[in-house]
Length: 126
Image (cartoon, rainbow, N blue to C red):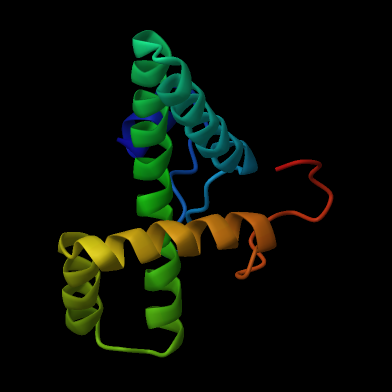
C-alpha cells in the first residue's frame, strides 16, 4: 500500500514497529471520563449516560490493551527472546483475562510515565 500511495504523489512513511506503538495521553483522560460517567449514571439511574460511558470505556480500554501488548512486545524484544516465543507470550496475554487487565494497567502507566521514552520531549501534552 505504501508503494501505491507514494506513486500517487503522497509521502507515506508507514506505521512504526508494533513495539513502538503508544496511545496519546488523552486516551487515559477518556477512560477516566468514562469511569466518572458510569459512576454518575449508576447513582442517578441515567441509562443514556451509562451507555455512553460503557462505549467510551470499551473504546479506550481496547486502545490501551493494544498499547499494553505493544509495551510487552517492546520488553520482550529488549530481552532478545526468539520471535516465536514472543508471539506465544503475546497471544497468551491476549487470551488471559487477568493478564489482559494487567496489560491495560501497564499501558496506562506507560502513557503517563513514558517508560520507553518514545515521546518527543518538545511535544506539549502528547
